[in-house]
Image (cartoon, rainbow, N blue to C red; front, side, top):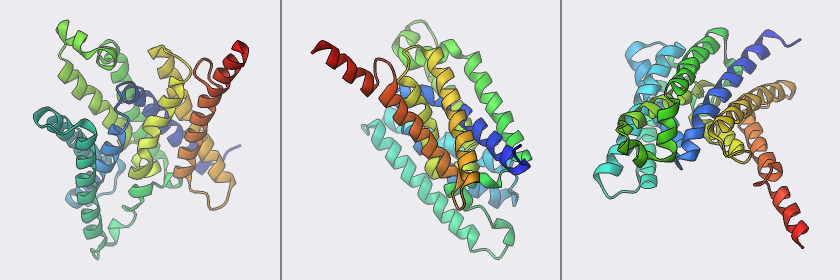
Length: 285
């Protein structure tokens, strides 16, 4: 039987993987994989500001701050692309570096204060999944349920946004508002994973499960299900491996497990897998 700590960490990691896997599908399909990187780095100043304002390290308080700046960063990227000649990747790089720089300055300021209550905030940089407790997992599960419910509620609208935004506009759908809504759900998926894997590695949890699922299918529903399952599998496997090996950090191990799933999918997936394509070429010779 798993002990209490391992069960808690595994449940938290599975929740993080499932939610980020589901929302990551849209980022991969829209060619916006780096949006997760920008949002997660932009969340750091929000965590610092939330602590400075409330002097509290409650997960929900810090996540609210992270979501606020992550959301503002995404709106800033949209505004830069729409109102200037800066390309999307350039806007992402600009916003990521500015917000992350502000976050590091604020974090350094907080760590310089004599108040011992600030201890532990720096764990949001690289995550500390092993420190998850039951209340953290409940908060993650609640916010994750909101994000997944949003995906189900606006399934048709998000599908239009992912595959043919112009067609959606021609049908009268408010595509800009739908884009902001999907971005908000993606921000939620990111902030619930910050405590576990940190701002630096969280982007991998958005991209890796969806990239692996894309190798296996062309159907959105199947891809969403596979990506959710791959994310949860990576979370549980990372938690189990880190508990079985001394001095193995949980967050990076979760990301490595997700990477292994991507590698296996790229090798063995039917039609797109390297092994399948090699076999087809041999059959033609």
